[in-house]
Image (cartoon, rainbow over all chains, first blue to last red; front, side, top):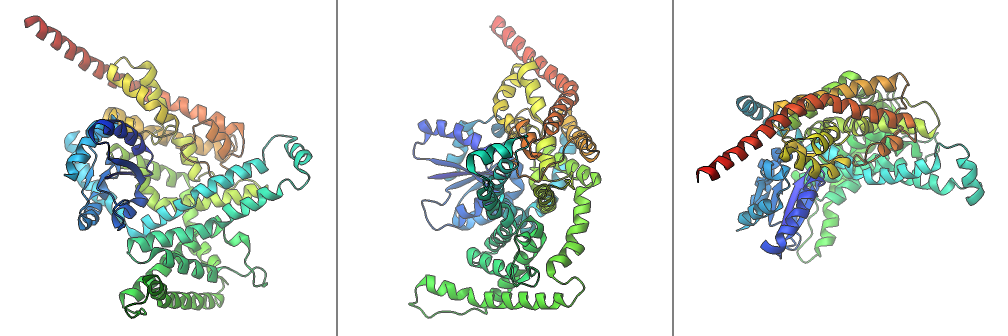
Length: 106
Length: 435
């Protein structure tokens, strides 16, 4: 299961990824959580390889203007796309964001 | 504020989305980013080759022999001197990807068309490395875009060679690119021949005079800087990635200026421009957009509110590397006028200070070296100026100025948060008493 976090350069979300991984040890050990740059996100939607394709995409609130178009791209492949709530993003609340991601996949 | 915020969100979001989603602009920005890691390697090499310490060249020569610079020059040629090539490939790739046509083969066609436009080196039918680097950025990006558009048009019109069933997909894919390649290359050579009859002589000179020179003047001016900085921080205070949106338009200009500075630095000439990508990254965004490292330090060491202090301590390590989303969304700065005012004001003030300090020559200008924006300040100012202490001194000065601007606003916010915390605890206490 691939949880893909996306922000401008993939830098600030990588902070959150670390916290999410810690939370995932209990909640969802099989989750593979990564942070990617906005310019690379299409690859995780387009690819036909199930191992590489995102199962859920979470956008940093600072690029929420991408939501509409990415949601459209994601829907075609059945990938849910959502914006990370800015409070959880700011406080780097890994557990809450992971819970949200898992609830979107189901 | 909420009403104003909502109004701004409704008005600004669609415009921001339009710019940030515009296919050509984003392809240019993302394509230019492709070559940056290679530029960073090249910059380190260039600093090693020209380390500004007396006796350094002699010292290196005594260890590695008199040709010690040779390997470094080769690396420079293979990195910086090909930035135009990398950008052409990158931009064409990203644009083709957005159009959902075969990105790699389209990028290679674009590269071929780019080479067609390169001027002859003194009529020797050879290509000079001076026409493959950052100096031809606008030629690279225009050929990339035009080529991808031609390819897309050809494919859309259905002019492709289709292979019968049974032919391996990779074979048929190579034929799919054949017709678009033929059309693009034919168009490229016709353009080259046509331009050769004009006074410009070649396409690069034409683009330089018509497009890049006026854009460079705009991007290098204090006016252009202040407008860009205001836009970036207004967008951030709404919680949108301002730099990402504004750079869709401005990055090509700032990278072009950076290339021009580097060429001068390489040649040992005076650095022509103050404003490059590093002008912003190194002297304005100390700690991230809004120069928030000073604010984070205030939070971590001066805050009396527990919440503010905890966030400051948490955000400090990332802040040293110029990442500040935890403060922007956590404090928050977004939709919070108390902190948004200094957040917008500080970088504008720093821009004016830095611009005057550098244009008057008090402080060394950025030498066109690609220092990553994540490099901590002090170190980054030293590297970006090619090893000048004045660059570091200005960073420290700017950091202090940022602290002074943030201080009164920070105090107000800290006090407000402290009062909230005290009220919450008295409320909790009285509850336990009454229970």
